[in-house]
Image: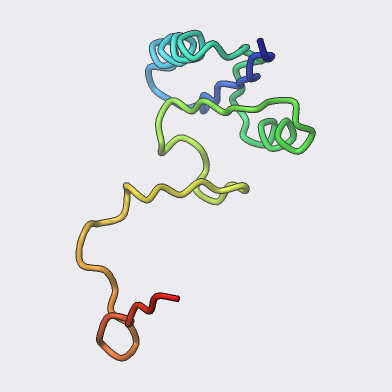
Length: 99
């Protein structure tokens, strides 16, 4: 069996209901059978852990908790508003060709 992925839980220091969310995050880590490395309150510490590959998974309590300007940045397709696909510059769909 392969080694478990190492996880860090990110909890902003100013987060309300920190204890409740932290317990839910620990349950999440256990459910996914990750190895809990630590619980961190400063994103810079997580950036350092990622750079040195000390952890494999970051578990954030909510999508809006990590700083918006973080790098690496995560973006979610499901967050985009649904609607028609953008039109091509000519105002029509591109022609598909089969080779």
